[in-house]
Amino acid sequence: MASASAGVPRQPARDVAGLGVGRALGFVAPAMLLIGAFLVFPALWTIYIGITNYRLTGIEAISPSIVGLRNYTDALNDTLFHNALWLTMLFVLGSAIIGQNFLGFTLAWVMRRARPVVRRTVEGLVLLAWILPSTVVAYLWVAFFDRDGGTLNSMLGTPGTAWLIDYPMACLVIFNTWRGTAFSMMLYSSALQAVPPSQLESARMVGASGWQTLRDVVFPHIRGHVLTNTLLISLWTANDFSPFLLTKGGPNHESETVPVYIYNVALQGGELGYSSAISFLLLIANLLVSLIYLRLLRRRS
Amino acid sequence: MTYVVRRIGFYVLICAITFFFAVPMLWIASAPFDKNPGLGVHWPDWTLDNVRKTLDHPYALHSLVNSLLICVATAVAVTAFAALASYALSRVRIPGRDALLYGLLLLSSVVTGTAAMVPIFVMMFQLGLIDSRFGVALVMTGGLLPAAIFILKDFVDAVPKSYEESARVFGASTGQILRDVVLPVARPGLATIMVWAFVNAWGNFLVPFLLIRSIDKQPAAVLQQTFTDEGGSANLSVIPVFALLFSIPVVVLYLLVNSRYGFRFHGGIKS
Image 1 (tube, helix red, strand yellow):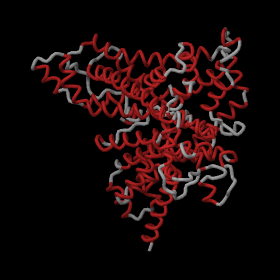
Image 2 (image 1 turned 90 degrees about the vertical axis):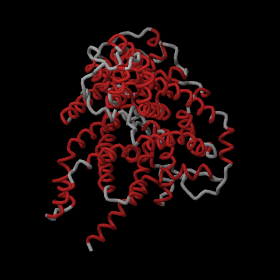
Image 3 (image 1 turned 120 degrees about the vertical axis):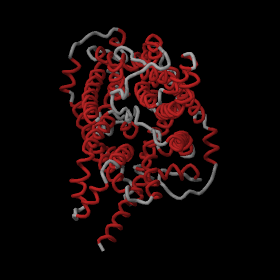
Image 4 (image 1 turned 180 degrees about the vertical axis):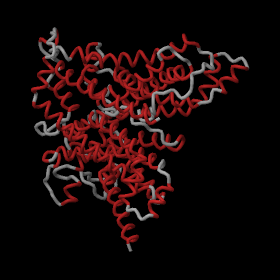
């Protein structure tokens, strides 16, 4: 996804191996069949399931009936869905737009002038947080926040504080900042290389402060990257299922972001029709963000 | 003077960030080899007993084998199908190609695992593919393919066409060109995409969590979460070693790709 720089072909296609359109279609077909069956079809089918009262068990499981837009009108009045939307906004704002963005940029900015050993060590740690399997990372944080033996309580001298129960959203925001900063760090590292050193030099000559240099010299060069990075990490964060791994949405829905809500409604509550309607809303939101993202990328290239 | 203050501030900042990233991770380095492992980080009382206990656990090794089966199948399928598709899309002007590429690009970010989990669950349920490792591999392959095609197409676009042209001049058939010219040249790209697909499938929790019911078919990602849900003290001699064994392949593959081809890991489908 990240490398998919822009949908524009760099050079006109020339069929050098003599494949021919027929065989080329044969080459593309298996991939398209799999994508069609396991990605496109489910996405479209959400629309249909979303207008039925299909359930996991009971009579509606055997013969679901069409209920029109009732699932969507229900969603409008569903306080738990509003709660999920609000928490997802908090999660995205806190951990992606603020957390990952700022920490990623700070790391990229600070590490420019660090010694190679320091730089490699710190970047290695940040990357490790990103590449470890999500369930392992979730366990590490559940252990870190644990009420009885957790490292956080022994560091702060606050034994018995149940962080994941008392402050679930704050924990998730810190967790996801830790987990995802690597991407922003790498993106900003390469973006900063495009800032001409001569301009930084002249900023220093005229005695600009660090903040002024950032605002007037660096930021204009990386503005596009800030925007696209923010869109991409916001999209990923809004769709992230890891909150489920840490808190399952609890206690009492206090950390139930939209993906966790969809899971809980669909597989705990068994309301497949209603959860499909909400999934469809999430798909639409993803589509809008992606369209804006791709448009921005195209304009830049 | 200001220089010294700045320098100190610089190192304090670096130390704080390092501390933030390192502390939660220290546990996975110390607890596996500790005689009395707890949830908190402390200097271990070294032992290898936990490793033996983990290997004796009825499901620990089994789940890693399941992960291996699912991920090898997924990685091979993704690489093979994405290679064919990306080559054809790069070299042949198929009608509607640009629209197709744009659609793939959109798909790779729009249809996420969480947005599609309900219809995928319902579909696999009706197909009778619940509790099937093959079904899990199919869903993961479908999910990873759009991004894989895109990354590989970028790669193939950058491969000069002169090799293929000269092979053609010397009378090589299309099959020969693909096998003896294109395949060797594209090997770094194929290796990268295979590792990328493997790592993504290895860490994927949601798909097997939705689709696999019986514990003897669970991959490691799901078993790891079962351990978490059972609560801390349940099995502390097994969990740390298991988490370490489960993480090592990802780290090794990352280091391998990084040292051979430079950094080419992509976000891909998270969750």
